[in-house]
Image (cartoon, rainbow, N blue to C red; front, side, top):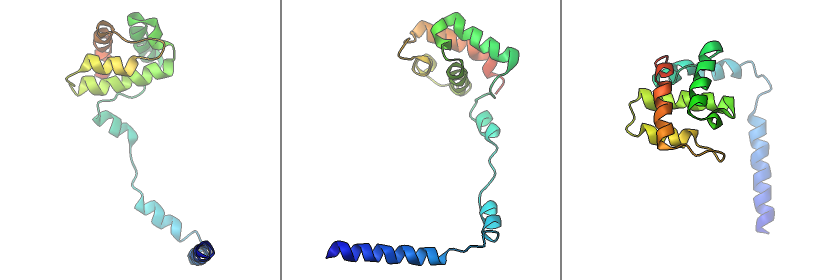
Length: 132
């Protein structure tokens, strides 16, 4: 009996909610647009110390730096670029554990980054990170 009552209440509530909706969506659109602020995502990344995604020669340079440390780091180039950009937040933010951060960020199932490799990653990315 309780299930039937609960179901009836839910159906009535849904019917009431749908009756409140308007078919005229032109009135609701400007209010929704005014309520949602515009976010410049590039500015957010810059404030976090993350440079824009490199293109052309700059991209090739970042990949070459990582390849020189260990070719396994660039097995997935998109991940390598994302990892490099995110590591810049640690470098530019003067994080206390830069090597640890690089080890966590760049290690994968296929390759665990050593402390020495992490140090070289950070040295190699320093110039790129200045573009943030």
